[in-house]
Image 1 (cartoon, rainbow, N blue to C red):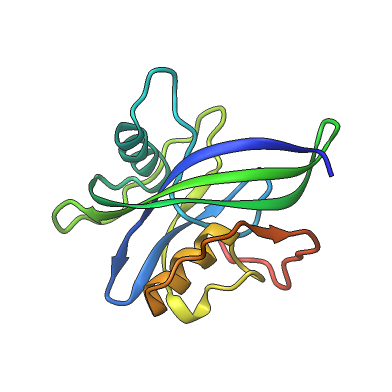
Image 2: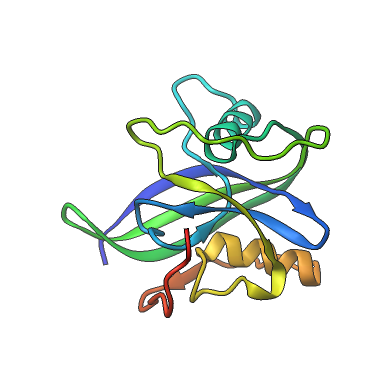
Amino acid sequence: MKSFNHFGVYGICIRDGKLLLIHKGRGPYTGRYDLPGGRLESDEALIDGLVREFREETGLSVSVKNNLGTYDFFVRYQEDFYTHMHHIAALYMVEVKEDQQAAPIEMFAGQDSLGAVWVELEEISLELASPVAVLAAEWLAGGRLPAVAGAYDQWEMKQPLET
């Protein structure tokens, strides 16, 4: 296994028992749900990057409440001569500012979100979502986060998401 590192910052936003997720349009989680978030830009603080990524991927403005920790996953993903991605995710609880609806998202080079959707926790599984989205749903449902890295070597999406 030859992996490359991907570090990102992600927000967990819950409303009426539903988790805010995005539809991924590219990358290792293409066609699945994922938490809003992603890579930091040059000289960008974690919280600033999270607020920017949320706005870009969901059209919503959020306030960051607290850090839940950093979690990692090894996911099968072919890129160049790599076979896996070591996905390192800093997780934060966030709240949508005021009572806003998601605005249309801007499409630009590098945009990997096809839009946001509120999803019932029990509908979030590895068949439809990224490991970090599943982790968030499990934490919201049961209040526990793992202490060890997850490994997702043979995962396949069973059914396509509707966009």
